[in-house]
Length: 299
Image (cartoon, rainbow, N blue to C red; front, side, top):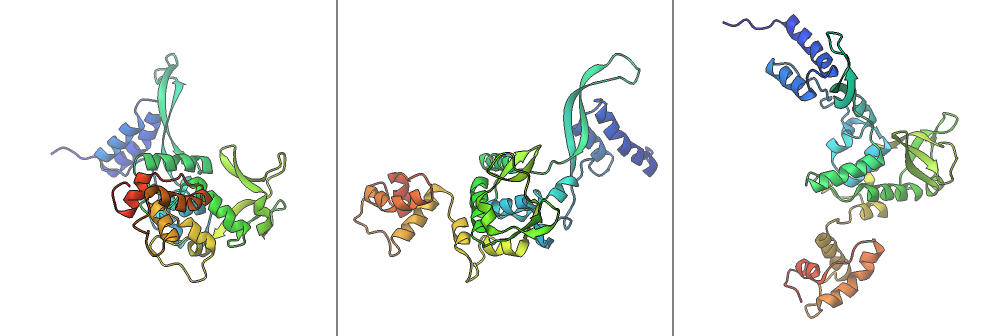
């Protein structure tokens, strides 16, 4: 019978794999395959639930809120939590010059190191949104794009439907007044989102923003849940349909609550719902799309 490695040897192997990858002697993929072959846990690390479960957190960061408004997916929200990101380590490959173990001349190699995942920004979240949609991997609960979610959040804050907590310039925890949000914007600086006034050269007015999770879920509920009777208009706006045919059906229901008159042509219907589409900055539907939304052939 072949002798199996003992626990000490396995521990040494686990410690050795990252060292080999950092010298460019193996790839991160090879390190993971070797660990799996010896029954070791993956070298890359990601916290398992219930750690960093957004449903158990009383307060969310601004990127968690934006992700929720757009995607309505708790796991995707969890991945935007800065604390979760700092506890995730994955392989990052870079081309570098390394000195071989025999002290020979430096050689250029692709080396791999374990690094904590970067905290997200609105720009990277928007890019992720596009990648998920292109690969048809976006959450089935998603109701809007990231930019639309930021606009919905800003509207809720500026109208007083949602309150944000943060540190002011003196380091005191304050409630950010709703009047401030008309003049505030998010911009990326040094790989992170910074809240700033529109005027250039102004210092960062508020940091460490937090939002009460229960308020966020009240305004933007889990898809399929009934809204509370006192929900603000902003929540209704956030739930508007995103697909063109769904938008058309929604607009038809608004314009013709008792059904579209059967004698109206597709062009006439298009003119009737045009104000609704313009109000929401949506592309006008084609006559064919209107026909499909009405459940008939093109007219």
